[in-house]
Length: 128
Image (spheres, one colour):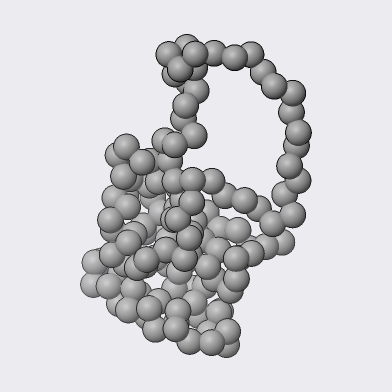
């Protein structure tokens, strides 16, 4: 799709976002069409923000509803340099832009590389 059709989808999304729940089927179709274009790896996060607007949620991790917390034993302790060398300290290397479809249980998310400010991946959680 061209930038013109993406702009048209963006305008339609902004309209549907303010309407009631009767518009959710159309809202999903519009969001999916936009995500098909903007959710590709390497897409600048600024493009997502300019078309989708302010996210409903900006978070360092996704919490699935009903997700069980698994208690784990403490592991070995490393100093910051060792942890970094082992690939640790990556918890802040990305964040998620979350856009709700119906509720907090049904949403589209974009995982964004915080250093490059580009999309890593995108997907849906449709609250199965």
